[in-house]
Amino acid sequence: MGNVCRNERGFVKFILVMIILGCSVYAGFKFGMPYYKHAAFRSDAREFARISLGDTEKTKLQVLERARELKLPIGAEDISVTLAGKSVRIETAWEETVDIFGLYEKTLHFAIDVEE
Image (cartoon, rainbow, N blue to C red; front, side, top):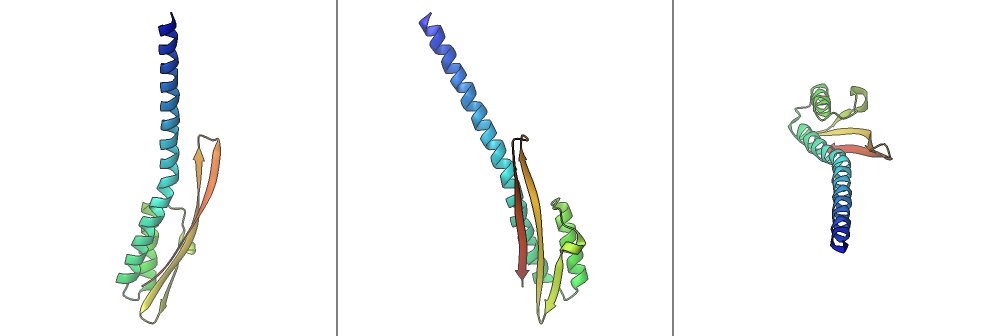
Protein backbone atom coordinates (compact mmCIF):
# COMPACT_ATOMS: atom_id res chain seq x y z
CA MET A 1 0.00 0.00 0.00
CA GLY A 2 2.90 2.40 0.73
CA ASN A 3 4.38 2.00 -2.77
CA VAL A 4 1.09 2.91 -4.45
CA CYS A 5 0.86 6.13 -2.44
CA ARG A 6 4.45 7.11 -3.34
CA ASN A 7 3.86 6.43 -7.04
CA GLU A 8 0.73 8.58 -7.05
CA ARG A 9 2.60 11.48 -5.41
CA GLY A 10 5.38 11.15 -7.98
CA PHE A 11 2.85 11.29 -10.80
CA VAL A 12 1.17 14.37 -9.31
CA LYS A 13 4.57 16.11 -9.00
CA PHE A 14 5.35 15.23 -12.61
CA ILE A 15 2.03 16.67 -13.81
CA LEU A 16 2.54 19.87 -11.78
CA VAL A 17 6.06 20.32 -13.14
CA MET A 18 4.79 19.80 -16.70
CA ILE A 19 2.00 22.36 -16.19
CA ILE A 20 4.47 24.91 -14.80
CA LEU A 21 6.89 24.22 -17.64
CA GLY A 22 4.14 24.56 -20.26
CA CYS A 23 2.92 27.85 -18.77
CA SER A 24 6.49 29.18 -18.71
CA VAL A 25 7.03 28.32 -22.38
CA TYR A 26 3.70 29.93 -23.29
CA ALA A 27 4.53 33.13 -21.37
CA GLY A 28 7.99 33.24 -22.95
CA PHE A 29 6.45 32.93 -26.41
CA LYS A 30 3.86 35.63 -25.70
CA PHE A 31 6.55 38.05 -24.46
CA GLY A 32 9.13 37.05 -27.06
CA MET A 33 7.04 37.66 -30.18
CA PRO A 34 6.68 41.46 -29.73
CA TYR A 35 10.44 41.77 -29.22
CA TYR A 36 11.11 39.61 -32.29
CA LYS A 37 8.75 41.76 -34.37
CA HIS A 38 10.47 44.92 -33.08
CA ALA A 39 13.90 43.62 -34.07
CA ALA A 40 12.69 42.48 -37.51
CA PHE A 41 10.91 45.78 -38.14
CA ARG A 42 13.92 47.83 -37.05
CA SER A 43 16.15 45.83 -39.39
CA ASP A 44 13.74 46.29 -42.29
CA ALA A 45 13.37 50.03 -41.58
CA ARG A 46 17.16 50.38 -41.61
CA GLU A 47 17.25 48.60 -44.98
CA PHE A 48 14.46 50.81 -46.39
CA ALA A 49 16.39 53.91 -45.28
CA ARG A 50 19.57 52.55 -46.84
CA ILE A 51 18.02 51.82 -50.26
CA SER A 52 15.78 54.88 -50.34
CA LEU A 53 16.40 57.12 -53.34
CA GLY A 54 15.09 60.25 -51.68
CA ASP A 55 11.41 59.50 -52.24
CA THR A 56 10.08 59.82 -48.69
CA GLU A 57 6.49 58.88 -49.61
CA LYS A 58 7.57 55.63 -51.28
CA THR A 59 9.76 54.79 -48.28
CA LYS A 60 6.89 55.55 -45.91
CA LEU A 61 4.60 53.21 -47.88
CA GLN A 62 7.23 50.45 -47.76
CA VAL A 63 7.58 50.86 -43.99
CA LEU A 64 3.79 50.87 -43.54
CA GLU A 65 3.42 47.73 -45.66
CA ARG A 66 6.06 45.92 -43.60
CA ALA A 67 4.34 47.02 -40.37
CA ARG A 68 1.08 45.53 -41.66
CA GLU A 69 2.83 42.28 -42.60
CA LEU A 70 4.12 42.00 -39.03
CA LYS A 71 0.67 42.99 -37.69
CA LEU A 72 2.05 46.00 -35.82
CA PRO A 73 -0.48 48.62 -34.64
CA ILE A 74 1.05 51.43 -36.73
CA GLY A 75 -0.81 53.75 -39.05
CA ALA A 76 0.55 56.00 -41.79
CA GLU A 77 0.26 59.00 -39.46
CA ASP A 78 2.57 57.27 -36.95
CA ILE A 79 5.49 57.00 -39.40
CA SER A 80 7.88 59.88 -40.00
CA VAL A 81 10.30 59.72 -42.93
CA THR A 82 12.60 62.71 -43.35
CA LEU A 83 15.37 63.46 -45.78
CA ALA A 84 18.41 65.33 -44.45
CA GLY A 85 21.12 65.75 -47.05
CA LYS A 86 22.02 62.27 -48.23
CA SER A 87 20.58 60.45 -45.24
CA VAL A 88 17.03 59.23 -44.63
CA ARG A 89 15.59 59.05 -41.13
CA ILE A 90 12.66 56.80 -40.22
CA GLU A 91 10.89 57.22 -36.89
CA THR A 92 7.85 55.50 -35.43
CA ALA A 93 6.56 54.16 -32.12
CA TRP A 94 3.85 51.78 -30.96
CA GLU A 95 2.55 49.79 -28.02
CA GLU A 96 1.60 46.14 -27.75
CA THR A 97 -0.25 44.57 -24.85
CA VAL A 98 0.69 41.05 -23.81
CA ASP A 99 -2.03 39.10 -22.01
CA ILE A 100 -1.21 35.86 -20.20
CA PHE A 101 -4.41 33.82 -19.69
CA GLY A 102 -6.25 36.97 -18.60
CA LEU A 103 -4.31 36.84 -15.32
CA TYR A 104 -1.41 39.14 -16.19
CA GLU A 105 -1.34 41.99 -18.66
CA LYS A 106 1.64 44.13 -19.61
CA THR A 107 1.87 46.96 -22.15
CA LEU A 108 5.18 47.06 -24.00
CA HIS A 109 6.41 50.30 -25.63
CA PHE A 110 8.54 50.15 -28.77
CA ALA A 111 10.19 52.85 -30.88
CA ILE A 112 12.19 52.84 -34.11
CA ASP A 113 14.59 55.66 -34.97
CA VAL A 114 16.99 54.73 -37.77
CA GLU A 115 19.08 56.92 -40.02
CA GLU A 116 21.09 55.70 -43.00
